[in-house]
Length: 559
Image (cartoon, rainbow, N blue to C red; front, side, top):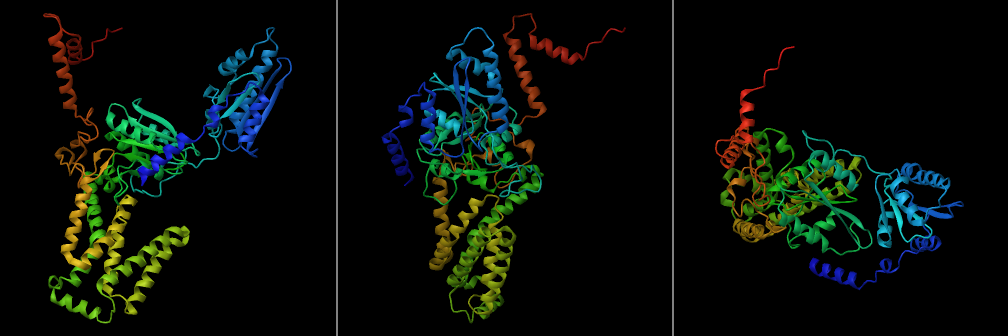
C-alpha cells in the first residue's frame, strides 16, 4: 500500500502544474505585492510595509508574516537599518542604480545574520512562510531575503516519554533549529554534518539529516537520502509520517525505526554510526538503522555502573516475554496441560472456577480488553484524573467481576502482572507490539496449548530474522551472529571493554575507545614507520620529538 501511495504521489506531482515557477518575478513593485495578496487571500497576518524615497525615486516594500518573525529583528535590524542606509545614500552626489542598491543593501544595510537574494517565487514563499522578511524593490527582478525567524516557541523541558533518574533533564522541542543546537552542544565536532530538505507539497516541512562524517557508513547515508527524496506527499505533520514512508516493510508489528525525544540518546546513536532524522514541528527524532535490541536499551544503562545497567536490562527482556506470553501460558495450562499444576493448587483453581460460566480463553480476553480500554481512557483523559481513573477503575472492575462470578481471581492476577510487565520497556512502541501479539498467542494457546505457542513463537522469530532497517539486519548482532557486538545486548559489559562500534554500522572507523597503552602503541608504530622512511643516519622528526619528550623539560637559565 505504501509503495502504491508513493507512486501515486510522485505521478500527481509530475502532472501538477507548477504555477509558482512558471510566473517570473515582475520588475513592477505593485504587481508583485498584488500577486502576494492574491495568492495568500489577503490574509490578516500578512504584513506589507511600503516605503518611498523621493530623492532616490526608490519604492520598496517589506513583507513578512506576523507571528512567525522576531519583531525586534524586523523593526530594528531590518527595516530601520535599511532606512538609515537609504538616508545616507540620499546625501551622496551620485544616484545609484537599482543593481547597486541591491548590492549595497545586501552587504551593508541589514544587521541580521542570513541575507540572500532570489528571483524564484517558490523559494520566496517558502522563506516568507518560514519567518523571513522579504524586501521588494521597484524596478528589480530580485528580492532580498533577511533571516528574521522567531515567534513563540516551547522552551526546553524534561521529556515526558523517556524519564530517567540519572541523566540530563532536557528534551527536544517542536523547533528543528532548537533540536539541532541541542545535538551540537552534545557533539562539539565539525564532523557532525546536517543536511536539510523540504518535504510536503503543501506544508513544506523542514527535514534534517544529521550524521557524523567519518563514523557513519556512506551507504547508510545514501540510502536514507534516497528514501527521503522519494517521498511525495501533501504534508508532513509529525515524524510518524516519515517513519512509515521510509520503512523497509509496513507489514510487521515490530517497529523498525527508533524514535526518541532525548538529545543524549540521539547523540549516543550518532556516535555509533547511525543517522538521525529531525522533523520540524515535533520533538521526536528518528534514528536509522534500528535493531531489535535498541528498544530495550535506556540512556540510564550507561550512566550507572555496568552491573546495575545489566540487571535492569535483563529485567526488561524478562518483562517483555512476561507481557507477551503469560496470559497465553495460563490459558494453555488450564485448558490442555492441567498435569503441570501441583495437585493442591489445581484443587484451589478448580474451586475458584466452579461458578465461572466462561472458559479460560474467554476470561483472559475479557480482562485484557477491559484493561486496554482502561489504559486508553487514562491516556486520553486529563492528567489530573487519568491515572486515578485507570487505577481505581481496574481495582473496582476486577473486584466486581470476581464477586459476580464472571472471571476467576487467578485471571485477574495474571492480567495485572501482564499489565505491569508491559510498562517496563523504555520504548513505548515495542510495548504496543507486545499488546498486539498477546492476543495472537492467546488464540494459539486456546487451540493447541503450549505447542501452538511454540509454533507461533517460531514464526515470530523467523519473521524477526527477515526484517531489515535501512538494509541492516533487524536482529543483529543475534542474526547474523556478531560475537564482538554481543557486549551490549542482554547485558552491558564495562565501558573500558566496549572498544568498538557495531560492525554493521561503522566499517570505516570501528574503534571508539582506546586506553593509554593503545595510544602509546599507535604512536610507537607511527614513529617506527617514520624511522624506516627517513634517510640512513639521520633521525626523523618523530624520533627527535620522542627524545625531547623523554628527556623532560629543558632547564631554564637562572636570572
